[in-house]
Length: 428
Image 1 (cartoon, rainbow, N blue to C red):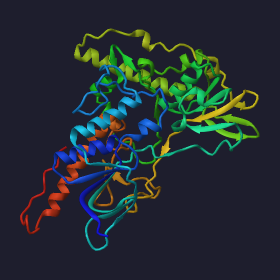
Image 2: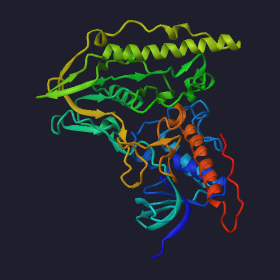
Image 3: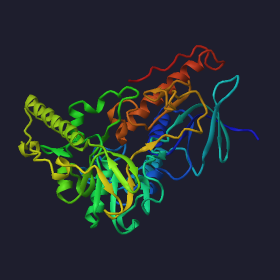
Image 4: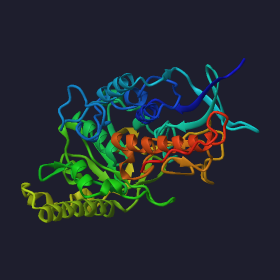
């Protein structure tokens, strides 16, 4: 059976795949976007019920469409975000095929391009863009054995407090997901323990401006990608309940018991690293540094923004930080559930090309991989700090599309229909 042919196959129709399709379409590059589920499926079915976007609607969107029925400074719900990408795909006429799973991608032998095997047949393509994003395989550290508590789930499987059995809950991970889930569980009346590791916690708003605005004017969205092997530090910021600054002292004051990094388990007892105070202090230092940088920017530019001296006052450490718990007997504390907000690992088992380093991570620079013709999109820090946000993915996709257009120009040189073709000039 002859295979289908196209210039570019984009794998995944989340925010990265939709952005990629827009830029390829603008250049007139034939392509198809393959999605095994629905457009933006992870927003719908792999997030908790009350999740909202971490950036305000005016900022965390694509340039070509505003969020309908969401105020500019409000935070879109997960369903509104998913609907937004469906609408955007319709607006740009993206050639998306849902319900099609890519099972393998292999380079052709003796000729250019790739064979893309799918659940609906094969496609031959000159270029392949892996736009499946970072949230592919939930990671639960092998610390607590099965059966030690009635329920252990990853944050991607958590939906609401009613889903969990009666009893106390340990939430492991103090990034945006862990903090919001812990607070929701506490508000539902549960006893909650929150395991806090290294983190960054910017102010949600300062002097009348959202932190997204501050990172923009201070040039921090363009921070360089950390070197390979550098420690990943999660960001603790929340758009829940209209948006608020994550304050671990306030969480402790409201009844959540903070503990250090979850380290080990033995015979019903969970042990924590003695690093809680350090982790809180480092997060505080980053928070205060951003406030000082914002104040300097206001003074330097003569802006009329209200002063907010109280934001600099942190207050004393709560008792659980000053005298941290290092062990927790799960049964004695009544812990019946553990929610692991511990991130994800990539799964590129279908991409059978030489585009990965010795640790299995994509070997790429700004999305352009070490395997000519293969690209990655939608990864944190793909090109800069902003790559993790919706708007950042759109700009990353533009760079990748421009690179593909440039390569098409080189490959067209000397062909019968374009004997003297020159490569297109790549945009910055």
